[in-house]
Length: 357
Ligand code: UD1
Ligand code: UDP
Image (cartoon, rainbow, N blue to C red; front, top):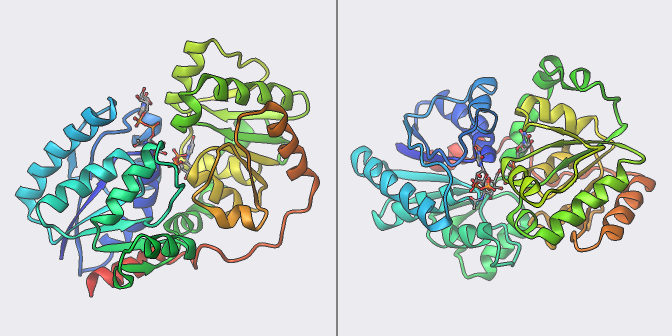
């Protein structure tokens, strides 16, 4: 079986590190890896391929940044050429980025069956570009690989047939298990930043609904200033956020702003943090994998089981006081006993088995 896999953004490289390596190690599936170039900075792309030994993409489309329509359209044009040339048996996409939708739309129009990893997640907020990307992708997919029970429920509620849905756990847990020990041995980040274990708050911000809304972005940085009076704040700054922070002249004094880091450094920063403050999907779960309390700066989350089980405090960044209160509250209460929410860390194997059959 020949599949084309579309990747393009940081979390997709990270997910591919588990799946593509497993595919290379077996004989049933041949994978053609296509990198759209949605993320292109050295520390948003190349670093992951190098340190996680992700197979080199067969095609690099170098699309780069742009408005949603233009970026997605340019990707589609080039992906279509590749699908027509390669004639795959299936096309595989991850998550909910513009690269995901571009790949899925092309495959659908050429009647190539689609496999969607991380299907079924919903925020029920159609203003999020990701929500539109994932809903559309799910409704044209043939294999919907869902990470959680709530994702299965969402799909059934939307009328998607049960026989297309495969609850296989979360591939991000595979990745966390694969690299935890390697990161421990190789990463020097804690030493390099001269920070003390469990003394700092790790922050990541990149969601459009926060970065593109000046009031929300200001609230986030004002709360970080307040929190910095008590704790070191480490913030690997996403390029999108950097742009808006600079444009709005938001103060970053007292904060330890660093460039985005590779996955191995990121794991070490997460594991050793006192608390994680984030609007990232992946980082919310990694906080849980490492038993670190998390405050999610959003109105809703797709990973509702983290909130329901009190690992995560969902906090819309509409009030500085609310952010600071929720951080204090999460720090004052004991971390709940860890449950198994995301499978066994063998999601890639399960997906390969299902596709092979
Ligand atoms: C994208 C995804 C989001 C995902 C995130 C992971 C969409 C709609 N959004 O958001 O779901 O959570 O990736 O990180 O697909 N930029 C650079 N260098 C880069 C990449 C981006 O400078 O290597 C800057 C550019 O100014 C660009 C902006 O960041 O316009 C946003 O990049 P883009 O890929 O459009 O969206 P993300 O916010 O990264
Ligand atoms: N990540 C990283 N370096 C960073 C910030 C994040 O390696 O500086 C990793 C993080 O550990 C997680 C993934 O990127 O595995 C999450 O991606 P991101 O937050 O960009 O997107 P999302 O998961 O929200 O789609």
